Length: 449
Image 1 (cartoon, helix red, strand yellow):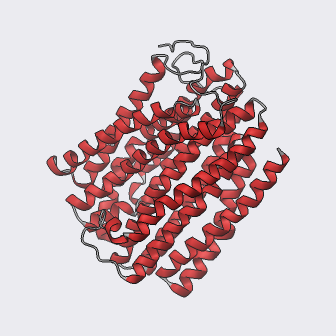
Image 2 (image 1 turned 120 degrees about the horizontal axis):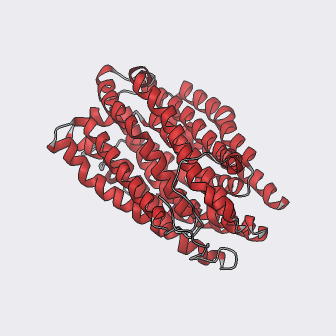
Image 3 (image 1 turned 45 degrees about the horizontal axis):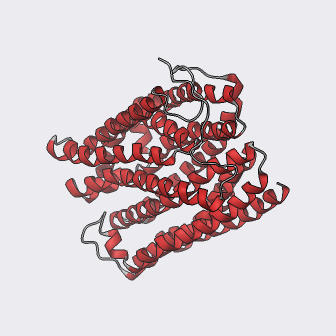
């Protein structure tokens, strides 16, 4: 099967258009697309809480660190492939463009095999690492043993979609994502309620949804709708681009891997210092934080092709200006998202924990975790900058160093003295310090450009 060969044609002029204009045109569909993704992530736990109960909700929610393993491999393949593609488009390098998709498919298969095979064989032992009670463990295991079977569709589908974003067609990428969310919204209650499959039904619904999502993105490329030059639809590791893909991909992977380490420690501390009610509240607050962080991260997805294409075209001054524009926009967006959450905290929590009445301490904890959103624009824009200009070492070492030298000592000290409250104090302080470090390093990097 072949793609239709096409010469690159850009919907947006990344090299000459106003950066404000590009940001507005690209960020709106990117934010909407990521909001759709975040809704997709909430569907399983929302229906689990509604149809089964708080224990099922807590058990499935505690799997979050393990589910990040699939996310890490996805980011490894997607970020590396997207970065190489955007620079190849900027440099008008047809040969590299044609090698991207075969290489991406091969890496997706390898990554999925590495995750799925051990996940099936050692599922009981892996879920046991969470240290949760036997009652919660049963729900978590039932979900995980099914969820891990669909790893390839998640990795390949999201990686292919990242290529569509990297060529600047963020609206198209969003439409595919929106379709998948609608399908998941319809299928999940069907599998859980009508078919009476319990938490496993939610996982099967996700697998079917990602299969269809992967099919849609494949069809897009097969029909020759991409604006970059493509070639045969095949599976092949391409040595000429593999090093570049792995270099950037590894930086993104290391960030996610360090995040797995971070979440594992975080969730273990919640289990150690919290009861069932505290665990349920933390999961609800953390999910809400993750949901609100997604639009900000979506904003920086639209920054990636602007940085990559302009850097490939030797327009370094536009890279520098882009960082300032995106940081201002990100902080503004964060403020807009945080204010209503701070005013109506119970309304927000009740979405996942019906009829939950918040104490003053819980309101304070929710406010602290939501305020972390205001630091994300600094850290995210810095990492996207490093990835976009090929500074893989910086993009790799900083996230890893964050967990070892900031998160671990701060969170352990605070939980020792403040128990479960220390989780919230520690997260807020560590996020602020990390943003400060990245601001200093990115400022020096921009001065060198």
